[in-house]
Image 1 (tube, one colour):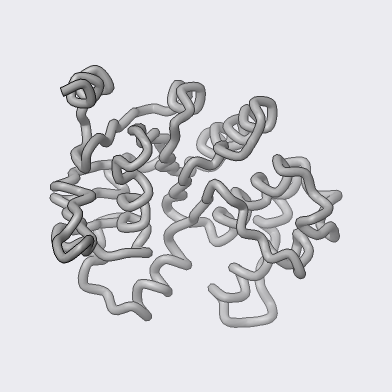
Image 2 (cartoon, rainbow, N blue to C red):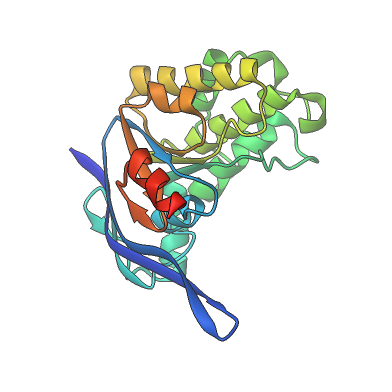
Amino acid sequence: MVLLKSDNIYKSYPLDGSRLSILKGVNLEVERGSIVALMGPSGSGKSTLLNILGTLDRPDSGQVLLDGQDVSNLSDDELSLFRNRNIGFVFQFHHLLPELSLWENLELPLRLAEGSDRVDTSYLEHLLEITGLADRKSHYPGQLSGGERQRVAVIRALVNRPGIVLADEPTGNLDARNGKVLMGLIEQLRKDHGQTFLIATHSEFLAEMADHRQYLYGGVINITPEVAGGLEQE
C-alpha cells in the first residue's frame, strides 16, 4: 500500500532576476513499511524534495499525498499540526537543544503534540531500551558521543509514532562504525514496528539495505546512475 506519493512536483527559486529550477516534475511513491533510499549527487534536489514531502516547504505546482490525504491546500497552522502528528525528521546534524537533557529533548515533541504536561511516555521508554540509551536519560547532548546524539535524533523522530520518517544524510557526520549502528537501528525499527523510511543518502552501504532506490538527478527522478553519469559528461 502506498503511504507517501508525490505527483508532478515542480520547485524553483529566484536567482539574479530569473528562476533556478530545482525539481522538474517529480513523481515518487513510498510503500508503507518500506525503506527507500533517495540517491543522487549534491545539488540534485534531494533536500528540497524531502522538505516538500515533509511539508516544510511548498511546491510551485504538484501534489503531495500522505496516507491518501492531499496536504497541498492545508494552511500553515494545519500543516504544523499535521507534520507533528504524521511525519518524523532526522537530519545530518542532530539539532538537539543543549540546555535540555536527553529525556527532555525527547519528551518535548510529545508535549507539543498532546498540548499537556501529562503525556504517555511508554513508547519513548521502549525506544530508549532498544537503542541502548536508557541509562543516559539524564545526560545532556554535550555529554553524549556523536553516534549517541544521532540515535537520540532518530528516537525524537519516532516518539509521536509518525507514519513516515524522512532522513536527510543521517549518517553523513558519523564514522563507519556509528553509521552501521544507526543503519541497524533503522532496519530494526522497520522490522519490529513496520516503520516507513525515506532516506536521502550518498551511502552505498545504506542504500544496499533499502528495499528500493530512487535516483534524482537534475530535478528528475528515476534516472539511473549510468544515465546520470552520461549526462554529467555531456
